[in-house]
Image 1 (cartoon, rainbow, N blue to C red):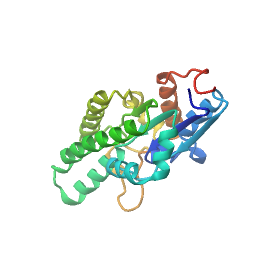
Image 2: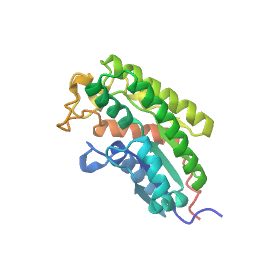
Image 3: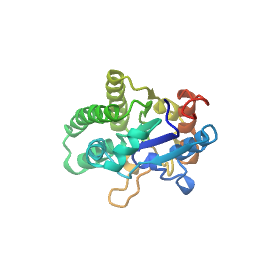
Image 4: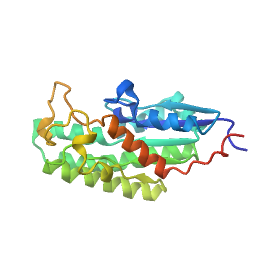
Length: 227
């Protein structure tokens, strides 16, 4: 028998949480609003956390009973993770100047994504969709190198686990100025370390682009999970 209600669980970092969107109505909340009009018994949990890394999410999935319960009850999950892994790698590189930081970050991210998928699939058979990363700094060589490489790891790990990847990277490419809140030059030097000035989040239009990508990808059937 199907679930008596349709529960959407959004997993991820501050982008999932809706930072830089008016009233934090980011893509997850926008998608939830659309789903609520389709499923009469709809409910929604946004588990997005500002600053969350892949390692931290893997840890939360292990130790948080509330999050594990929500996932068990879910009808749909989305995952947005990895941006902070690269952001923190850049900050470490800024201070330490060790180029090995980036490949180490990519390797650790792949390990963590395997851990995340292992836990999610053990807890729920519900559909899961993972967003890849857009590049908020398209005019920096480092960012334009490592974002695609992290996305490649996302593709490879997701393929192993049978998780569809929603290609946000391509939808933002060439439109960064219109879609990213606080966009300036598109270089990593725009980051003001220590001040919280990180022009990385989508603005309202950017969140709408992500929502549209998800709606085009997720097969939504009005008769499922509604009893």
